[in-house]
Length: 27
Image (cartoon, rainbow, N blue to C red; front, side, top):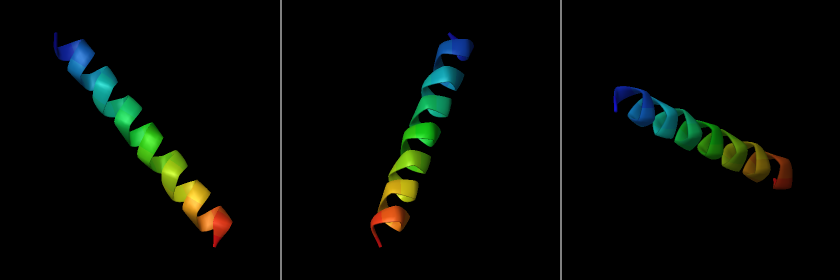
């Protein structure tokens, strides 16, 4: 269970990172 939560957090962080990169790339 802990592993699953940690994995979801990592995925969210990766997604947010990609979003920031896309936004900075557009601007």
